[in-house]
Amino acid sequence: MPTILQARGLTKRYGAVTALDDADFEVGEGITGLLGSNGAGKSTAIKLFLGILSPTAGAAQVMGKEASKQPEVRARLGYSPEHDCLPSEISAAEFLTHMAEVSGLPPSHARTRAADTLRHVGLFEERYRPMGGYSTGMKQRVKLAQALVHDPVLAMLDEPTAGLDPTGREEMLGLIRKVHKEFGISLLLSTHIMGDVERTCDRIIVLDAGRVAQEGDVRSFTQETETVFIEVAERVEELLRALQARGTRAHAEGAGVAVEIAHEAEYDSVRDALVESGAPLRRLAPRRHALTDLFQRPKE
Amino acid sequence: MTAQTGQVYDTGFRRYLGPREGRRRARMGVYRDGLRAALGIGRGGRAKILPWIFIGSMVVTGLVMALLAGLANRIGGEGTSAELNLPSHAQFYGTASIMMFLFAATVAPELLCSDRRSGAIYLYLVRPLTGADYAGARWLAFLSVMLAVAWLPQFVLFAGLVLGAQDTGEYLKDNWLDVPRFLAAGVVMALYVTTLALAVAAFTTRRAYAAAFLIGLFVISTAVAGGVGESLDGTAGQWASLIALSSVPVYVNDVIFGKASDFTSGSPAQLLPEYVHVLWWVLWTVGPGTVLWQKYRRLGA
Image 1 (cartoon, rainbow over the protein chains, first blue to last red):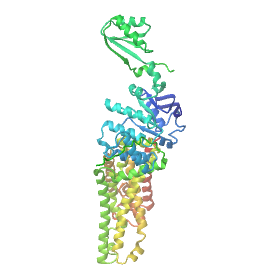
Image 2 (image 1 turned 135 degrees about the vertical axis):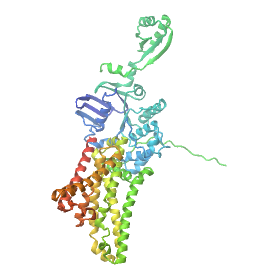
Image 3 (image 1 turned 90 degrees about the horizontal axis):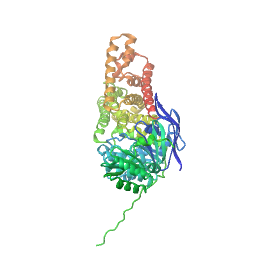
Image 4 (image 1 turned 180 degrees about the vertical axis):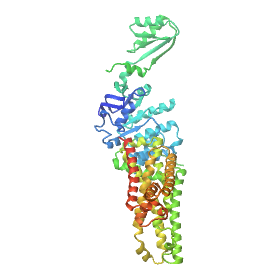
């Protein structure tokens, strides 16, 4: 897998505060999730790759070049920030044409690309309306479109589902998957929402306090973290004993038992244990691991 | 009846294989957008009101001056307009400077403030250009507009005077030097107001604050210069009256035309050597220019 972004000993300090501390990681083709809680160093890492910030030590390279020293390399990057960044008084078509031109495309090509990109993100009909009247979902689409209009090698999306309702979030995640699968553009998705990462990303890099806490394929994380929570009305102790007697890794949690499912056959054990213990079942559902679970694991 | 048939094609996403013109195109894009922002092109109707009122006023001023001078020369003979002390090329920037300052104070902030207020500045800085490139392109865009605003009425006035002259050839022979002079004086005016207005605009995200600060700066400095300049005698009064920021480029205009305009003729600072006025203008142009450059250089690494 060719490397697009490479952080080597990447360190950024703001006075006494260390935002990134000797971080080493690579981002290649595909959709990579950059995960971490607020202040973990995600936005700083993105700004270092984009060359908006200069590192205190180490290097943030984009296709072997540092954007802070060679801004031309940014022509092959896209960026959609978390915060508002759209001028309200001009139309999406005009704004995207301008952004394409500022990315280095000649005006005639820029106009065509702007119209095409707006069509692909579902804003073709609305493209001549001033953006001040757009909904949050439409604005997120324009932000995504401006990051793609110049056909970058990789686009960095900072919290792309922020502020969206469940339907809007689903549509945005669908668009993100489409951007890679159909457009062939690699993505670095910065988020603190585990669900977004699980549903879109191929790889994951977890930052914690400026350091790389975890990295690897998303599938390996989700396989390892498949926990089922069994909520019962009573007889928690009996259920736990029945599960442990069948060799299942389980522990009591409040009004239920958390079971780590290593393979599908263990669901039979769960069924048998419920029957044997006589515990009245209220709910049985896979549990999403919280981000903190990932952070607490030792780096592999 | 034959049913119409048609096909719908899904062209899908196409990779961009055309030219990529890098930083040069990026700067040009920011420049072009700066021109459009300054003139309200591609924006709503309200964005067009201020710039076009000012441009219209400047041109009308030039036109009225041309008509008056032409009429006087027609009726009273060649040179009557000069005898009647009607406004001329040398006088124009003194007369129009207030309008130019107001134009720069109210329109120039639009080129910088709105991008920082909306956050769009960060979308520029992640593209193949630096903060200094951005500020430079915006500066050049507003300078172009200011040059047009400064020169257009002078050309109108010149055309009016040429057409009003009884002997066009003779008039051109005697007055052709006015053209390079008003072009140079226009550059002086435009450089000064553009740089100062954009340097102030670089420190706020609110266009109204920048405009109010600039207008206040001109009004207060002029009032202070008038008061202090008159209360102090001799050289001290002359130096003190230099503080009037609205007069800084007009003194250089006087140097270029070789005579004091009505706007500056009563000021004690007029008695200072010409090089002082030129250096004072350089200071007030290069200084804010450096501040602007430093401010935006830090934004992009």
